[in-house]
Length: 469
Image (cartoon, rainbow, N blue to C red; front, side, top):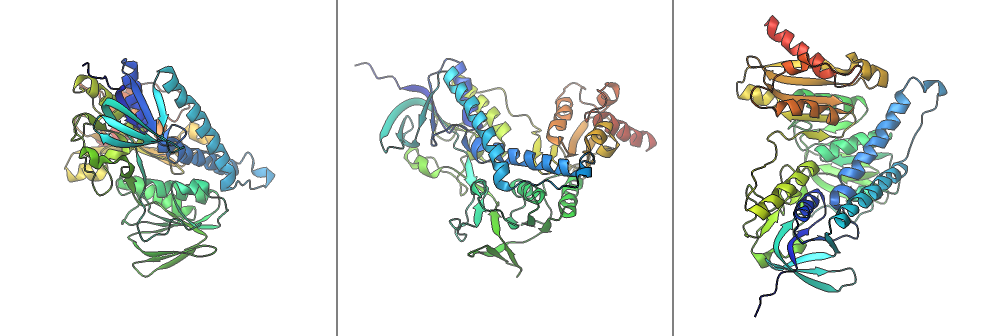
């Protein structure tokens, strides 16, 4: 008797960036691919609750701040304002465009999209419970888990209370708070502190660590701390919550140090957990860690030979950009046993506070610890013609380079369009055989006026320090 062929060569669970990257790579290589998405629209957390909506919110608030600060409109003597609900409408429009675009990718590449909740029956069989409670079973040769993550919920916090939010549910905020407590001052907490303060909301930002965004270069961390405080955000470091109590019209936060804070609402933004519980991974003997994350090898294979995992479900770096690349690399390994490509060593960090932060490579603190002889080149945005024209003169570009070889070791940017500006430096850092040198920026002619010109200014500043040393 002929053995029945599996329904698919590969099944992807989760349509965020990691799942999409794997699905597209496999489909373009002629594989029969199915995408299982729990929700009724594709895109995953990145499109619906994370990257896209929060950055769309940030953009709207940033433009509002820019308008109100622009001397061109100051004669009107009108402070323009927007509510959180109003700017959410713009975010929803962006989400709809993203869903339409990403849906077309699956249609064009003949990937079957099945909406429902996936559960492992065996390493090669998956059951899918659909919205009407019907269950479909499909078989496959290989599986990619790309189910992403969700905000961490401590058991002693009542997230069902209408004034206590996480970074997903805050996008459904319907009232207009005058004050908010944000517990957790990581990337998400700092971004939302910028957004709410830009809307005129009183913000208490509670940090569990001793420094804001402590993984950043200290100078950049200090810059965003100063900027947030200068705009009225109250930052409290080294604090842990004792209890969070929801009231009829607000929230009370008690800290372990004895502080009592009150606000109209609270956003809990401290950590994330992998979306693993509903997959029934016990049936295939996969064992997630306490954060619901899976361990994988260099080819994104789990401990089960035909099951792979990418994106937030495997932890670091937990970036949408990296997840898409992980999906492509994983798909190549699934087809050929391994993939010679890997994520770049220096993955850029983009933090969409107001102003933005972006960095790639080493920090000053890391280089000092390693006793690397480095020098610093800086360009202040307020000295750039383009920044003066656009009235976006807050910020700087900072280049760290080796004093002898002139090799670029790290780039750190604070200010409007930082996440775009960083890629110029990243491209040079990735050059091999002596191509990575700060002198490139001196010997290259940049468009004028542009923000990219900051590289030439910073390079000259740094090389002058070396010649004077």
